Each structure stands twice: as structure tokens, then as C-alpha cells.
Length: 143
Image (cartoon, rainbow, N blue to C red; front, side, top):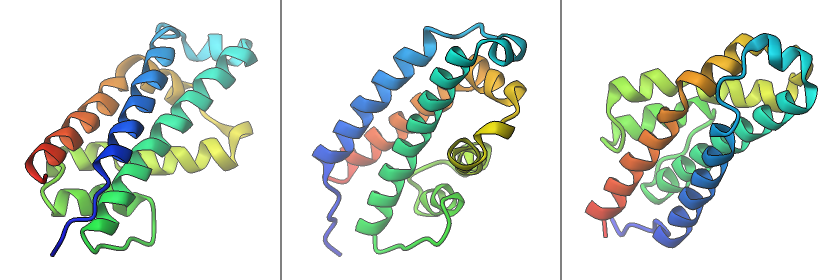
């Protein structure tokens, strides 16, 4: 099967992700109580996380489409990338909740748990960088 992954598009998306992560890192240290009290900061962080997660989903969907794999749910993207050995299974399991968080950020913004937002901001941004690293490896090995 001929691979139809647009590596240039994926690399542009990874650059976007790096920009978003750089902005989010400026806000690290923010606690849930700070986010509850500072709506501006909460919105910045929530939107940054939403955009960052969307980049992962867009890249994953693009690669899966090129591999001839269709998914019905965003949550299935990480599972399918692991099945194809693009992501390690354990890592894919650890980040699969991002799809649900993206949906909450988009549709349930008033009910977002700031403890979760703060935890991701302060302890899980490396998950995004790890995804970028796995995708870069995939692109290198599938030219």
C-alpha cells in the first residue's frame, strides 16, 4: 500500500503544537484555585490544551487515514496508532483520556474540573512532546 501521509502537513502541525506548549509552559504552577479565581488565565490554559489535543487528534486521524484505518470516535485514534505500532501501547493507554478532555473543553467548558486542568498543565505536558517524538520517528521510518 502506498503511504499517503503528508509529512509536510504533519510537521507543520507539530510546529503548531510546539508553539502551543511553549505558551502553556508560561502558566505552569497555576493551581486549581488560581484557575477558579482567574478566569482569563483559565481560559488561556483551557484553550491552549484544547488546541494542543486537537493537533494530536488531527495528526493521528491523518496518519490513520493514510494507513487505511477509519475511526468512529476520537478516543479510538490513540488505540489504532498503538495497534499500528506508531505509539507504544502503554503510552497510548495513558493518553487516551485526552480525547474526552477535548470534548469537555469544547462542549462543557462551564463544568471543567480545574484540578484536572491544573494537573495536566503542571504534570502532563510532556505527554504532548512524547507524542510529537513518536510521530517524528514514524515519519523518519516511513519516507
